Length: 115
Length: 115
Image (cartoon, helix red, strand yellow):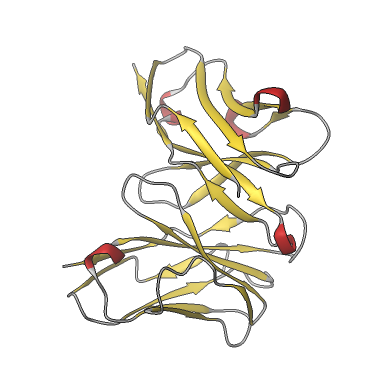
């Protein structure tokens, strides 16, 4: 596609439910990032993939958060046993190359509300 | 660790007036600095970036920013505000560990334009 696509755009979950958020990066982009943006805050780094390899997951807040990119394209962020503090917009971004300062392209985000 | 401080969570200016959004950073290595804009329910869009070279950087939509190492600042300016500039603006610094360009964002400044 022309840009980074994320789905669902909006998700409401009951506390304790599992959710899965999908990211379709720009075709051919090597680097893929997930960020979490709480209400009124700037985005915070969660995890980074270079192709299918998850090179950095230092930002994942707990072991309830899991991300994968098995074929080096589409990525899924999974949150198990959701808690109210998980409510946020989850942003996916992709970049053409692994190195350098090429532009990072962001998707529109998936807004998760946990009741 | 790198960090970004944006002074003023809300800035309001009149249409046609100067826009000044302040950003100070902390970095133990020469920083790469970025400004992103976020319109409601949309992803982040890159306005401009500083990597190396000229310290005055010009971006899209008439915005520019100046890197001042002595002041650890990267303030964003636009000579004449337009109604379409109303949005949330984020300053970010790049963590270049591993070359992944992991971004650390400030908390954002909401810009309102008064007619």
